[in-house]
Image (tube, rainbow, N blue to C red; front, side, top):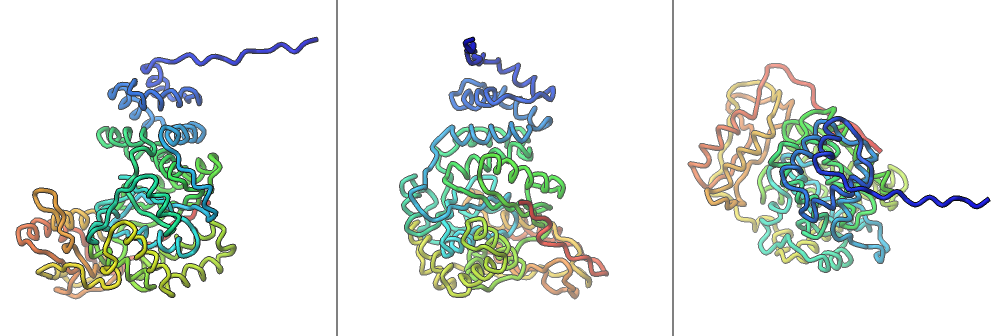
Length: 444
């Protein structure tokens, strides 16, 4: 008896209203339907208003891990996918949801390169909160954040790290949808963030991904449980796409480090690359750096990973890689060798504590807004010398009149406007508060 051949089922294109209604009512898309949605957005066949309705339906009804994996893969395949297989070194990137004063990415790229790991970083708009890392790097004279796909790969091969704007040919559907998510209030959607992050990072050539999900008043994710769900979503979907992923959930209810402001943060990053700098940033760089070298297979044990990271920070090899990266992207590395070359603000004044007590809480978002007002003129041009330093941490005891931070500024009018935010950022109390844990959870 002959086996009866069954013809493959033909995919019948659904209507866009049907797809919106299906997700609105809690249905799960098939792989073909997800592919059809992504292709329709890329080909400009799905109108903006129906894309917006679909995003809102996903926001309220979510997507399963399987749906999200297909969504991430289809967005990745909507543009160029960089093949770095000819380079024998492991390729691991870092994704962060961004936070105030977070300059760890500026350190981790050169640190990974010094450790023998390629870090192919293309920055998306969702990876920074307040001041983008590429905006910070623009404080270095001559630094260029744009690169062709060819130059990107050549720099990775020669230097080991690269930090540039996401190329328009990488995950173009993600770029379209992110702009729409900003307009529709759907940025915080966990499956949409997961698909966006993985599609970009994997299309840029990463084999593995270390994720830093920040939560708190100085991050996009303000709820701890949501941050944990996002960390689990990215690692789970990443593994289903056969990529190695590990995530840390970290606290962002106070600024990282002691400085917020473009050039001021670059200076702090240089300190970190010398094995110095604020304690909280040193701890986080060490934790994330260890995850990178372990995920890449460069270090087998926790102790070996710690020793590898510390060695490259202390012997100057990570700092040397940072200089190489800056030079490769047109920047003047003399500013890295001598940070005193950065232009300084004309005036520096303290923000005095209004009373005696302990720093009980800090609104990092208010500090970010204050620095933005302080450093940006009416035309949107950033003054790289402006910002704040020496930020007092939660749990620090202060006397009345003692500085809560030092403010660097050039314009009195902008200072007065920024003080409204900076003054309201601190809350003092008579009793010492519990110090928040920097790393809340590890997901692997």
